Length: 437
Image (cartoon, rainbow, N blue to C red; front, side, top):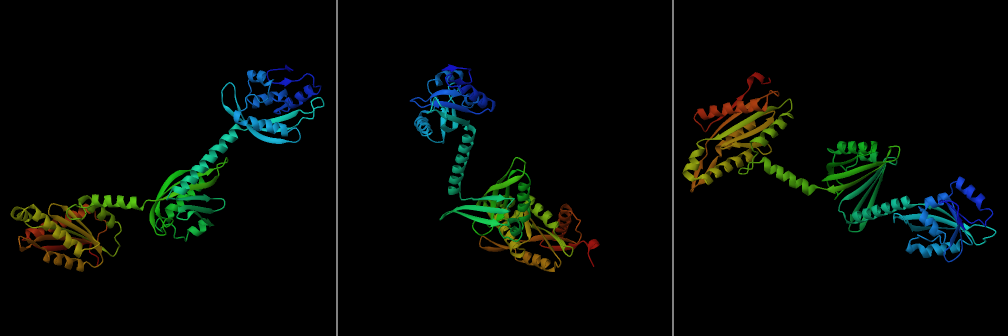
């Protein structure tokens, strides 16, 4: 036995060995030949075999005594058994080898078969391939799949997978009976008439899905859907698309989470932030915001109606009956505004001033409601039924180009006219310059 080079081991007594080495090395075949014994000694190993197995020079010397040198202890018996069986037939098996220099575990796929040498009739040839990277990927995929299964079994969310090429959507959900799947084919066509997504959110949803099918993306989307629970709920979808080597999207994966409680909580916080804490009407800032939004939606046939009401001699209530009585007066007026103008935009400007905005084609009924509100303004204090006097100014215009500030200023001037006219008065003025005939 001799070492012909650091890369190959050859038995000089085998007449065909040199030719075999040349043929194998030129073909870069990862092959070795061993003879059956307790240690299965090498009689040949190609340079590419040594390289593929990550064998060092020190390994080569030690391997002269055994091809089992460096095999992971847990795989030794499998290696011996496989080599023994390879005396009669071809055997394929995977083993782990520990690299001497780095200590890293290397996975090798081995194909062993009878070598057919005349002198060494029991010799076994071994072709190997380093599959460490493949095993690592497989293990990562296995772990990913296990994590996915656990998540799928425990999450209350709905998971989905969409295939652009097949136009197929698969929903997976975890229920009382375990994991259930719903498969929808021809999804894009069915989606156009499907009630799964709220009609007002449908365009945003389909735009997001088409974008994810066009190029890899990771994003979130909030919309109303019937996927969870069978009725429209606010949902948040986390989604991501994957592509092949050419960049073509192959799948869109996502998780649909019910956020209706979160949405309701946030909406309630927003509502509280918008409201005056005493009266429950819109505060000054939110009133202005809602009125501006409503002004953008006024129809051509409608007119703008802006009201400002001021409690006359409000300080009298505080001074005579106390501040709690003043609060009672304020809540009485706010209740009357909600009673006579339900669904309209009402707010408290601050102190003892209130505001209301509406838009309608016929505003005569609105004027009548203002008179009723003024007439019903009473409060019981100290066992007495006390009249609450109001100075109310209302401004009407058909001019859709008028600004919120102009509306407010005009109504405020009318309100001061009412106050200067002896208080406890309702005055309604219309912008006749822009009155439609």
